[in-house]
Image 1: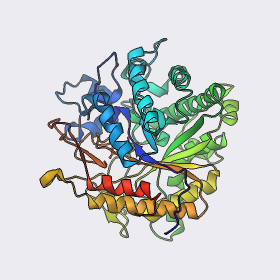
Image 2: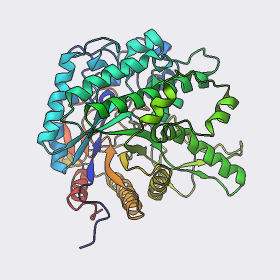
Image 3: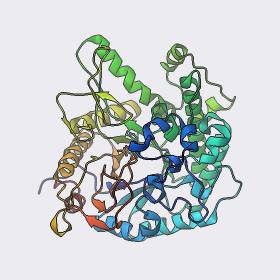
Image 4: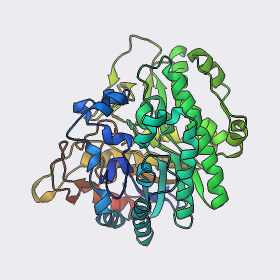
Length: 476
Ligand code: P53
């Protein structure tokens, strides 16, 4: 038999996020999250990601997050389906406004916590290690209104109160925690990443980087608190990753590609090394950014670095210094030039397995800490055929290429704890708010307008992934 590249205790699983998955947006005392005011792409979602005030005034009759795929009421069936695939881990996030409805209450909402008790207990019963993202794109709307989200330093204490409740409650149940989902996305989708409204602001970079500083300090202080509460906790950062290639060997393109990668690495440099990278001084000067810091920040960052590095990878990116180069992939708000060597999906995302191997090697070389691939996948339209069959060979081929490449990276010497593909069950797209852009092994009967039975079906990829896990990545 072929030998597996993956260690025996490799954590195979899938990833979700409360705001795209749970629905029940006003049930059991939950407050509004900023995503609860966002319509789908056909009703202006893109604009509102940068101008939340307009969204707050708007009276839409359909908001995709309100019902989503109703994990809140169907968690039992869903978790059992994941266990049937053989999941060793399940990545979920905890909705902040479910626990603190406005974001800054003193006491948590007990009913909200009881939901997560049920989910986490069932995960453990089914043999799945919970991997919990504390904050995944769902700053409470109350905090946006009151203090423009993370632009305000008081958010650090609000976040720490929230984190303390979770660490205490789940200290014997959850070992792996991520402080912020895709922390670098605050630069690209400031509303989702930081609860920021940048409308009418003179220097948006100033606000974004100041907010980022608050998150970085919050992440460090949460890491400190976590280790005090349970020294066995493993705390990770989370980067929206994907190596940037230069479009040509022109040194200007090479420099541009390095600069683009540093946009993201900046955050992980702080979270993993514990201090602002040397290149940031010049970057801030050029952008007219001055970061206001408290006296204790430097020491707090330095003393409380993360235990492991997690990241999402969908594709590599391509950069050019030539302003004439404008042929981009129209995938989402995170634009990249189109790479002629890669296949392009319906949503404009390009498949690059080798790019994942390169990305893993690059990140591991840079930080020398264990990695965790916590998102990867292909958003595609699926068709339900006779007998409720969904033949998603395009998804299988994407995932197979990426998992093989991940195995090669491990064979290269990279230490990797696990792999959770994105949206293991169909859920709402963060970028477009649509249902039609599906990532799951499990199909959910629901369309972009909210019609459908919400019934769950096993796609072909369900059985394929079951086999991948059973053979520890030998059969791909
Ligand atoms: P969707 C782009 C835009 C928004 C969120 O994306 C993103 C990205 C990709 O880097 O990040 C993650 O749903 C995110 C998930 C999200 C997933 O990518 O726009 O952590 O919440 O659903 C996929 O197709």
